[in-house]
Length: 143
Image 1 (cartoon, helix red, strand yellow):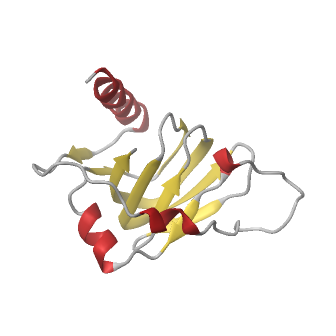
Image 2: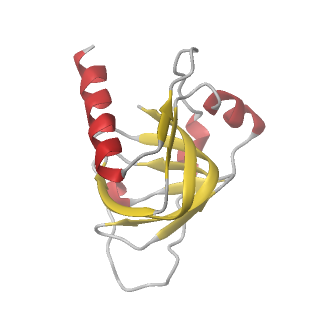
C-alpha cells in the first residue's frame, strides 16, 4: 500500500508541475502488459553520435496487438497539453498513446518520437525530458 501511495503522490506532483488537464482512473483493476512489449528497442530520431546507452536509457516503442490494446484499456488515463518538462522513472512504465505526440529524450540518449497508436515502455531508472508537441492522452501502467 505504501508503494502505491508513493506512486500516486509522484503522479499528482507531476500533474501539478506539468499543468495536466485531466486524469481518470477506470473502475477495473490494473493488469500487466504482455512480455512481448520488451522485445524491441527503437532507433533514435537522429543517428549515431557515439552515445553509449544502458538498459536504463532505452525506450521501447511498438505498434500494439489487439490483445495489448484490450489490456491497456483497463489502465488509468493521463493527458496534458503541449509542454516540456523533465521526468524520472522510479518504476518501469508501459503506456498506450491514444492521442497526440511527444518526443522523449533520455538524459543519456537520443530523442525518441512517440505518437498516437504507439505502445511504449520506459525503463526503471531512466531520467529524460518530455517535449509534448501535440496534446497527449495515454493509458499507462507502472510495474
